[in-house]
Image (cartoon, rainbow, N blue to C red; front, side, top):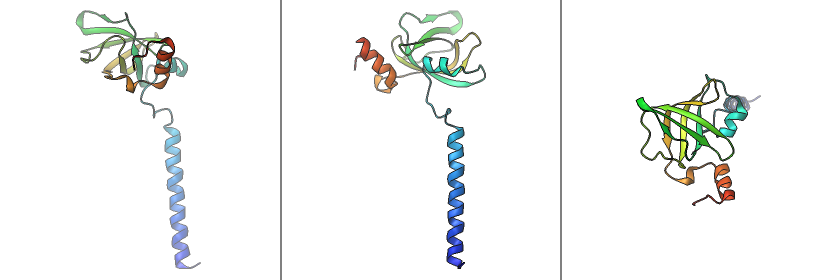
Length: 143
């Protein structure tokens, strides 16, 4: 083997190993590369209380309850399933019923969601495609 062929074979071997490593990392992270789960996906996944996730959807109309001490409870829906969310703290200014929201936290033992941060989405264009399709089918889409 000439020196040029040896160098080329080493470069190809290194690129192959790098490609394999990237493939293994992406395979291991396939469930983690999600911006948020809808309530239906949360039920399907059966996530444990130690798993930190983001829950996204619409704040269900009539579900917002503000309790003394800054505790807030509301339901997040994807128009198929709903999940009750508890949050301690100040809500974003754009937070309201019928608005898109992403809550970050853990699933409680009773199946509700304990959020430690809540983000309000300011525009429907950030809504998941599934929710937009369900709203259009129900005639509730404003876009």
